[in-house]
Amino acid sequence: MMVKLSLTDQSVFHSFDPAIFYQVPNKVGTEWRNFGGLSKVSPDMLEDTIHTAWEIANFKTACKRKG
Image 1 (tube, rainbow, N blue to C red):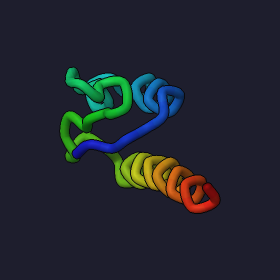
Image 2 (image 1 turned 30 degrees about the vertical axis):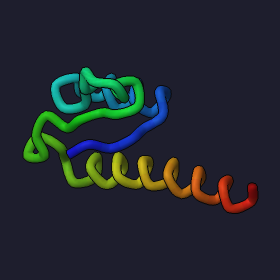
Image 3 (image 1 turned 90 degrees about the vertical axis):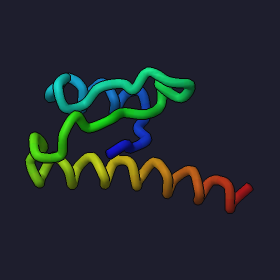
Image 4 (image 1 turned 90 degrees about the horizontal axis):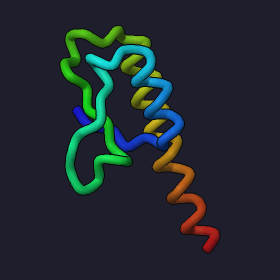
């Protein structure tokens, strides 16, 4: 599973567990993180990660609408 996170959020989640949250080496590698395996992530951490990614996407959409 991939989620788009800010650089700050990437650092926070990566420091929690580098084996689960790590940068994907590709063109957008500075913006995306990948879960090494969903079975390793606690339900609370998964919810926090998805919620954080949703907030970023929702904020960007709201800013575009205000234009």
